[in-house]
Image 1 (cartoon, rainbow, N blue to C red):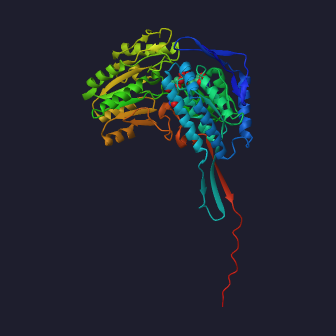
Image 2 (cartoon, rainbow, N blue to C red; image 1 turned 120 degrees about the vertical axis):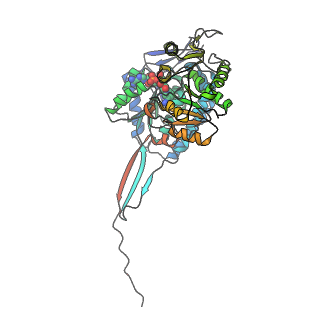
Image 3 (cartoon, rainbow, N blue to C red; image 1 turned 90 degrees about the vertical axis):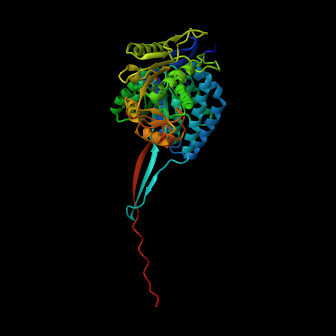
Length: 495
Ligand code: NAD
């Protein structure tokens, strides 16, 4: 197996480092890549490069939006040519099946294509009713140098919900990807140079959160931190940023519920629930990890769900037929198994799975079987905490109000799903759900135009859509005093 060797990407080139971190496959244990373990010098160099590229207005931040849009468009073309390679890197480093990695890369490119178009027309306002001698302008300017810190579960999607939007707005960036999955981020930064995006606009420094992430957050020349990751680290970043009144965008954890009413299209709901709890091995912030099912259909629904779940195929990242891959590392797998144990200890009923899988060549990987618990009550740990594994917690309800109350009984608020053929009920419930996204009769389906983000402890700010671009802008008001009103022409009266 070819080991990929990477350095940091700073100011349009590879910058050598002495120390490296290794990434071994979570699916079979072989060495995949070596990434730079950056020190303070590397982080400073990346921030300086981004600062220069921002402050020299002729490079990127103040050129016509159309020029930025065209450069981003050329980048999209290059990314399309590299889909298979990027997908393989993503599959190997995360441990996810290749066909889902490919879908992830394609979706990331779709986000970039949309963000590029937004660069053509960044909205502003003109205020003209403040007196004849006055004119007001409300303009949006790029926020500056953005520090982006991303997680390992969807390395490219989490990056592309930020990066092309920030670039479209005219910002420059320093990215700190997860130390476990930095490959695809470095690759897309290199491709940006080939597309003609100027040096210094995109910089990538790799390494751990505790060193590189902290340096980026605490640096005075970084204007905003855009972070995706756990709520615990998000809180830490917000606290540090507050010391400098630095802007933060936070995309954090979730504990989504899918509410299935008795009048739902049961077949469609089964597909949605299944996808919702096993996609990406359950390592997903909007994972449908809680199922709330109406009591009158619960028994038959669960019977079918268990049957369908038995057909899920676990496999290596390169297995084209695999549905579910390996968890990210051994410690995380142990944590998922300990959540499963807590479900058993606290009295939930284990309907399926609950174990590590080592058969069929998966013995060297960190695989956990799709797991379903029923009779889950709101005080149980598996109802409350983000497990980040293929574990579904099922709770029954008997009324609409009870379903809404159960769904909202969480500190998180990223996404929820509603399944019913009654449109009035669907709208009422979706209005009362306290989450940034509600899926109706589908799950995890969305469009690039729709903003994404969390209520409550799931985050601050929005990504995607026009809101996703505006997050990377500052609003400026300009009050203009116009010259004296011209004198009226002498009035002549014809005799
Ligand atoms: P994490 O919070 O451990 O790490 C995320 C990133 O932060 C990594 O790059 C890490 O190196 C860095 N980091 C760690 N400590 C830091 C510190 N003190 N200062 C600065 N940076 C630091 O999260 P993870 O384990 O990589 O990812 C899983 C989490 O991400 C889950 O909680 C999941 O819900 C969340 N997530 C949220 C979304 C969303 O859009 N809301 C999307 C994907 C993942």
